[in-house]
Image 1: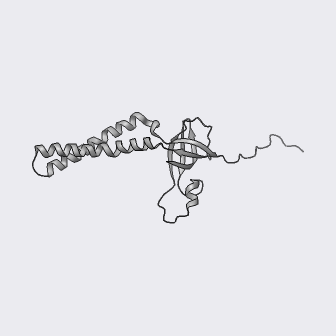
Image 2: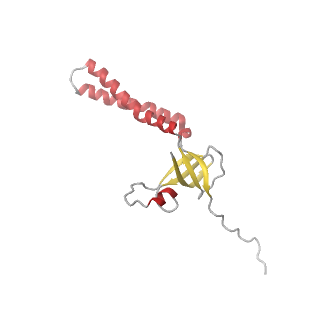
Image 3: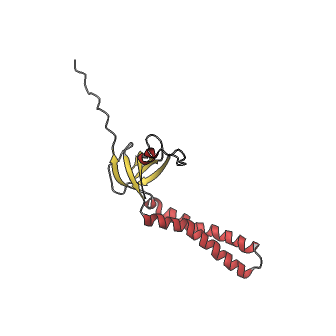
Length: 150
């Protein structure tokens, strides 16, 4: 997945980009012209893993490798669902009825979110989208004269 975004701030290897419709945001969204689009301009963090010299106002391409998106989806959605199913099946073997296994299943859902929280704390910036290319740099302002000649 790739997206075009405009950099709003740079802090070392981390950059904040603005992606979405509106002036100064994603060029791709501005060309759409769809009136029913629900996408709102939103800032988010990205990692400058290539070490490009970036500054606010630059237009960059942001990418997320498919393998990283799949892994994140499995951790955030898959583990809680497995936790729900596992706790539900075990509780259904122990107790009769539906209330206790359902309650146990919801406890398993909560327990399934714990690895996702731990994963996020360990990985921090390595799972962020990456700046893959510098597409456009705004024209630099003309330098001010250092002396007045008469």
